[in-house]
Image 1: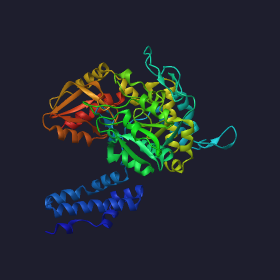
Image 2: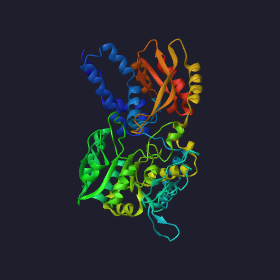
Image 3: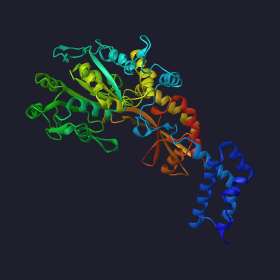
Image 4: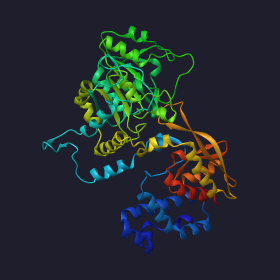
Length: 489
């Protein structure tokens, strides 16, 4: 029997009543493509020997349903919401920082109609899109008090960009926004050091996700890289010896997703600033994550924030909007107004600038910081979630999903910040360790990924681990049902 002859043609399928109804709803072109995809899949299965006469007859009896499923897949969104149960707060593969509800509302309010993106309502003339967030950055980054840090913790005096001593940041701090931190570094280096040398420690020439390398960005910027020191030890004298008449900038780079321990040495920011001020050179620090929140309040020590760098006298700081800041993807450049003004005038700035959606989301996020409403920013809320609260939620889920097919244990574990932030820092948590008696851990994890919405979990030592720190509390009921369904056989 020639099984291929049993397959209907595309035209035959389109004339059937059920498929004709789909054509009326979705259009002939889309439905015809779905029919071709289903028929092609059947031909492949016949060719591979997966279908005999009996199995083909069964498949043909369900072909209309298969066309419907194929059409739904083809016309559905590829980018989907999911439940992050990994415990990695800034998960690069899962979209990094979820944005605040107020950011959604501000996007809807301003992007669904016209807005004053580049229009000055007072003068009636063309305005600049920077003003919507620069005003908020100025407020946050020129804060003279320690209100952004935990109360009662005195700060040691540090050199400011004026060369004096104090706790403040100069009032001429300005900020511009580009599409990501790599673009921020590129723009800053191109503006301040094109054709000249940039001195950087060899131990800071990092590669981060996606094979993105700092030396490559420096090369594209037109600046010449001048490495000093060794991988594990660099002294301030190394910088001083390398400075010449072609030197344009001293660069310090956050190592992002790794750290060097043991026999190490690295100049402090204060030492770099003092050397740069003596020789009238600017200092650029690529912070990467760029926290505007005091991480010490959640137990994460020695992770520098934007205010720390500016208070130490760094001239320009570059950082991300969708990492520790908890906003949309963006590259932020903050620092001396005269240097930022030069970057704003660089033709690269227009090529790298962001759109109204990013400005709306970023403005709403920054307003939460101005109001000290840190719980409104999901990333900060997750970092501040206590282990006790996670235990309470985990015990409730355990009662609901415990069954003869699924064994649940509560185990001590650690959550990660992720996104190249504070690589050795963790947050204490409790995880649900799942064992399914009829499925392996990898099979259970695969079923969870195939659920709607997909659930992304960790697999360790033969168990599927669910960390509720990164699961929104309103997702708990849905997650409970998805876990029960995945374990069902």
